[in-house]
Length: 419
Image 1 (tube, rainbow, N blue to C red):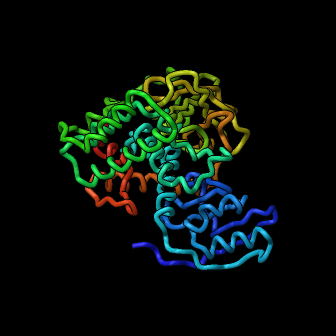
Image 2: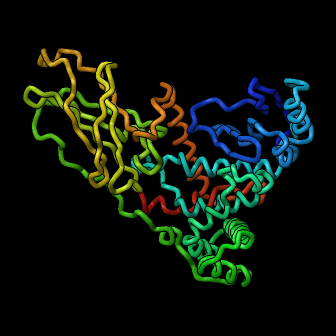
Image 3: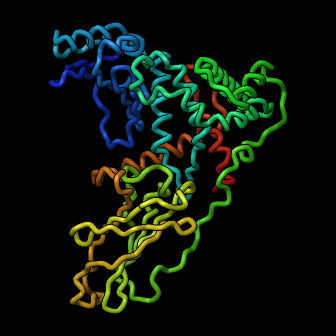
């Protein structure tokens, strides 16, 4: 059932931006964002996927979708606020429409492509980027009213680009679609995605063997195929196991050890296992020196070489020092001399130093997050587990409530093989 209409605040900021609704609270990785014609839309990932908040910077361009997303009253209020009459107003937004539901799903898919907390340690399977990318292409086409192709300044209007990048996976989706041994709702879901992809490819003039195979398969009106096991169909990165790893420093007395923080904002996706305790460290006394060893569990897709991942180390709140990390099997590892007050021999009764260790990618890192971000990361992990559990169960599919993403269904089927 669609949500009931609700009061929505529409206000104009000093810079002329018109705001619709209230911006979701929480750090960046708990928000799903969509760049559309004349505006940016934002949803809370951890809350209800209803109507988004909007920052409208060009009400004229946004009018093409405002009425369909929020209703005529909000569209008129935005137009009035941009003109300065009035500067703020509260009006009733329409019920959640098909466009609003599709936009929320598209935004969540882009969020998942960036923030999905893949973790071997926590049992959260990765989403195949090509499967997710192809469904995002279909959703983008479905939500075409949100975009204004004449300007070309909306990075999320990228249906043709996604198909061109991931079309090699089309054959897998077609094989999945042709398989008779699957829930009817999943077959309907696949059919909808594949036909939208075909429409995009036709409109954009895309070609290639995979797209020709797709068109020929669709023309056959889904003939009966052979049974397909999803765990085998999407078998990638199988056999991933944590390496024991040799000590980085031979000998030496352990001063203290602990776990660091794993702030996903500070490095690109696909580098580090998303578990909160993926970062561990040991401080040792080696002769007269004090050294720190850092070990970080790598993501299954971590780059093999050339990645300047570093550990940021602070002792007793002092100046941060950076320790370069290299990939060894499934661990990022590094070590460096540690600046401790070593006049004392740190007997067992002494208070050990307070050491903080985090992981970052220089040039990408926005800086440390807020102290409460760890709780939000736990909530995102819980959401991912919940969605994978739901994807493992057959669920009704319709255009308004389409259920899990295809990438989530495939990931749920691969849980036993991966973990």
